[in-house]
Amino acid sequence: MPAMSSGVAVLEFGAATVDLADGRRILGPVSLAVNAGEHWALLGPNGSGKTTLLSLAGAERHPSSGTVGVLGSRLGHADLRELRARIGTVGHRVADRLPPAATGLEVVLTGVRGLLAPWWGSFSAAETAQARALLESLGCGHLVDQPLARCSQGERQRILLGRSLLGGHPLLLLDEPAVGVDLPGREALVAALDRLAALPDAPTTVHVAHTLEELPASTTHAMLLCEGEILASGTAGEVLAPEPLSAAFGIDFSVERRDDGRYFAWARPRW
Image 1 (cartoon, rainbow, N blue to C red):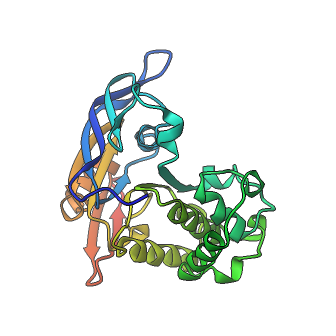
Image 2: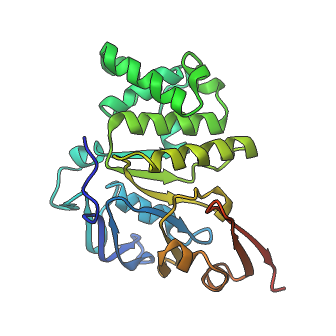
């Protein structure tokens, strides 16, 4: 499926909220538009609502109030199964649902039809060749026959990235893909995301991250959440700056953007 035209809204949040059964509000109101071709970073303290917002973007839950549009469909007025099939997700929660005995090649092939097990479908020779090529392009050619359970965390995330690419998803949600990944694995993942963003049919991405260092240079926009509300959103240069980051995390940040476009931050506690 081809990527959506640049400038078209891929995600639209209109005063969206999420409330728990006891009435506590854990997100919102959130109003935001993510357009095709953009690559967003989503950061904030633990418990700020990042996972909840991503679950709305992934059509995994409905808002308690307000509206959420995903890929041109409004939640509550769309077939969620069809909508979810158009959304790629990379993160440990997806990896945990895949069979650990499946090989790297088999996992990537499940992306063709959004399967969770390779034996639920059959794949053509062309699809298999494309899956092999994707693994090679992500630096995972040696993992074609490696069971997922024997791959490192960083290798699993890159295999999942290949799975999403084979599915041709116009929207890719990156759910803390660098968690538990060592430094070489993180850098390999960042490089893979930059290569992905350079493709002419690259998907729009929303990347939940814990640190600036795990963000690729191709990040175009950023949003900071704090206590369920948007504290700042806009271009990456505006948001990934000392003042908004310090306000979001309650710690004094210094930020450097290197010549290659990568961000680095360090902080001094206020206590």
